[in-house]
Amino acid sequence: MSILENIIADKKIEVQQNKSLYPVALLEKTEAFNSPTVSLKKYVTKKDKNGLIAEFKRKSPSKGIINKYAKVEDTGIAYMQAGASAISVLTDDKYFGGKNKDLITVRHFNYCPILRKDFIVDPYQIIEARSIGADAILLIAAVLTAAEIKEFSVLANNLGMETILEIHDVKELDKGIGKADIIGFNNRNLHNFTCHYTNAIKAFNQLPNNLIKIAESGINTAQEAHELKAAGYDGFLIGQQFMEHSNPGFACAQFIQELNKLKA
Image (cartoon, rainbow, N blue to C red; front, side):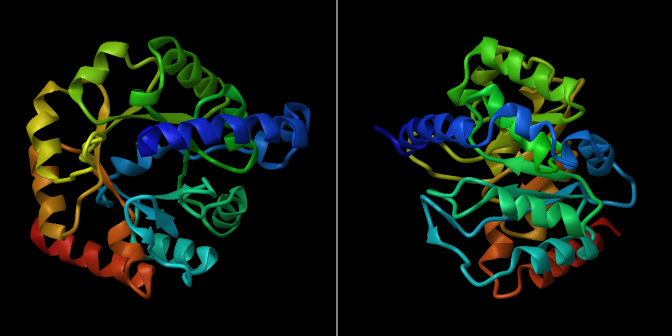
């Protein structure tokens, strides 16, 4: 089995366990479940922003431990103060070292949109995302059927959240986009895990015209982000580049400053 297949298999087991521990009826009673959400689309395209979604993650299957010392509350606040359009929070524990509590904490300290980044394989996780304060979810086209993409994105929409549909290959668009609000092109090759930001540039003209578009993974410099914006992308998601720094928030602020200079 590939890394992705292992993650999905483990995630399905985890979801079944959580359904018993935290039934939907309980999730629907949380304060966050009925609180207003903030539009990720609006913030990514704001004229005074750069479309940057800054991510908090402690580790990954490809890199191992990235940063085990950064505090989620400090990093989330620093990302927002640096000028990030939104914050992405990994909530997968086994492979990425994340927890639902991380997103709850970031929500408590920030008013910008928050993306729940996880491997969504069941409608339960979408209800769960709403209950912990997420404004948007991410669906990975490669691990979902066309019917699931439609069902999950419609559910998110009905709950007041927005959806990023992540693709790694334009062929995945053949499954349809459901009610997705944003297309995220991930530069990582799922077969060999190679990654380069130019993959997104090459794919741009084959993406739907009517959706907001962001690039993900393999974006290491402000110059690369500038090139992606020039190609037509509305924004980009960056995590590892910041999290490898001893102070992720400071790294994010420097990145945005450099990007602003390139725009001038």
